[in-house]
Image (cartoon, rainbow, N blue to C red; front, side, top):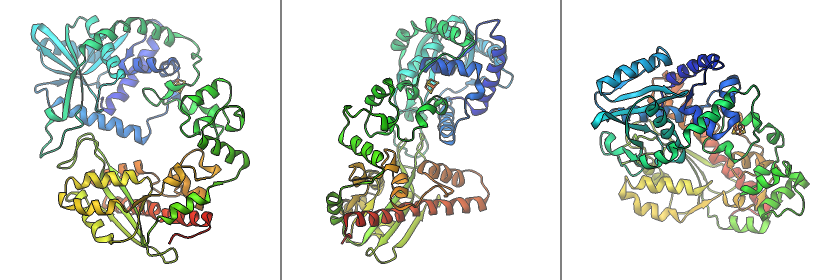
Length: 518
Ligand code: SF4
């Protein structure tokens, strides 16, 4: 929930603290405490080999940025609040906080230390009896165990430093909030009182901190093997290093569909590559198909099922794909937090398999409600007959369903076309086709190259997350008009490949089934 610059400055200051830690106990901030709970190796690396930790990627940074925006909105609920900035380093934040505590005003990022722990809560709110409430703000929609641990270590620190804490709150997004006019922060954000579970959790903090300080002081990195903890509660930034011995086997047990804990059973017995899985090991049918396809380097094909799937298609085909964005703070009237909102579609219309498909593209220009504009355009383009084909159609159907809620008059039309939607993911999710190059994935990003040789790799925009980030960047931040034009053109190329690619996949399926769709 920290400002990006604040995080960087905090990191720099902690590096300074690091040089002092041989003489004194290491400072453990709440983020390092949470890292330590996840993995001792990760904690040790933060303090002793920081250069091994990669900078956040674009997707992670976008999450941080969103958290920052939510944090600022939460501050508006505490009028008269004062923020403690990191401009002059950690020691100064503590002095500034101590001065502000006397004023009995809400304090944002109030910073204190105790027993080697450095707490910096989103909000310290003064309440009766000279006490304070701690409010931690998250952009998630519910309270998680990791949030309770976060609050527990802060309460431990503040109380150790002499503050009287009354209650602890986790303030998160209300997923049922519907925007009507200006954002109402008091309704969008819910402050859940988690004092009871924080109190229970706090009993473990002192011993955990002692253990973490011992870990940090070790000369050598603790030997911790990979495990489910690598992605729980967060995806660890050290994954590419720690998982290198797994990832050197492209075809590894973690790529098998729905393998879950069985992958760890295999890993514990030293089996990483799919080719090493003992024949006696019990695999599900799709897992067995993948392993066999990889062993024989042969594509698995079930022509009868494919033919039946293709037989259900009706021409003309409407090959449809949406791109969407979502935000914790709803950007549009009558929309909810994290609602997927369409900003683009590509539609290829194929009269038959021989004719060149006709392409239609729509890309929101930022004016009006994109849901209404999109639905109107689709209604104009989609005729009364023919299958509407999408890849992972649950998503496209869901987008249309929620879009119609803001344009009720379109409900009858949507009802009619819904029954015409066909999901092209089905033959791949059901393993009627499996190519050894898919590496366990049924994503169109791997199926298209596997079946047709076409690829997204040389596209400027190569996945949906990037498409969404780039759209929001060029449409709602101050960028050069030429760059905006270029990105919009890249977006059209990306979305267009998705729908044209679906036709290519259908043609490949047709030849596998020895038939063409009617
Ligand atoms: S990738 Fe896993 S083992 Fe490596 S530091 Fe992260 S959590 Fe620990």
